[in-house]
Length: 357
Image 1 (cartoon, rainbow, N blue to C red):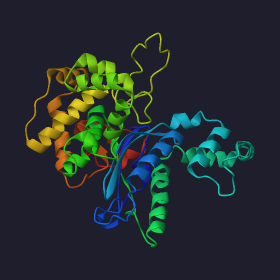
Image 2: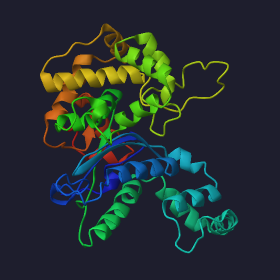
Image 3: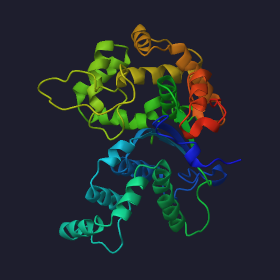
Image 4: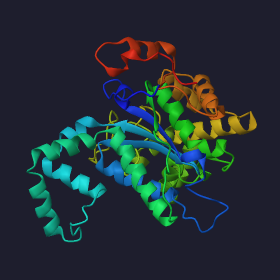
């Protein structure tokens, strides 16, 4: 029986959720290689994700837009929305849903409209709750695309399957495996030979972002990919100005005096972008060819993560070879899931403690 979303999403348990949504009948509705007249909607989804990330109290840690489905790795940041003043709430909402009657190119008119709307405290409370709700995030991503696609194709009917799937990510090992799985989706589908060749993925955006910074940063990233721990550490700062959640959480690292800037919250401590690229390359070659070599540098990083390369690879490989992901939780072991499922005071207590296989 279908379970209400409130029993599947609880930021008090975990802030990370792997969301999966499919087109009806798993049809190639995002991109039809046999119909050159059909618009490619995958770039639209990328742009929409960036817009939602910048306005919701939900951050995107990874994504992969395939021909018939999409994966989004979301982090819930409800405390961020609680700090917004009423005017900020209204500005963020109209950035996502511009009122038809509002002249958005007239800054004075927009400012007056925001000030007026911000006085409606009930409305502000409602919109604040929506801006930190995973269901509204996915609705704001999916519904506009369905309308646009149907209009472009001059048709009516359902574009998406009724519900999106959300899998709670309960620990760091599961988070790393899930992120790897999402970025390797094009490789697993046979439409890319290396991770960064997969267009419309978060790893493609991360690499393109570094390439735009110049030759020096590219050389540093290449050194990191060859297993240089020193280069990987130096490469960690590259993602601070990218809209995606950085791979490495550098908040505990002492900042250089000349920068003076604080680092954004990332996904994992002691695991920079260079090491993540090396892991993707290793896992991709292992999945594709059945053999690969891993430099000792990454093994040392896994030691710092209190994990092992073998366990991470085994979980990711199992996910890549699965036709579909089942379950509502993902953790590195059953003990973690059991502890969450039996703990009092949250919505997950009635669920069976089984991670997805």
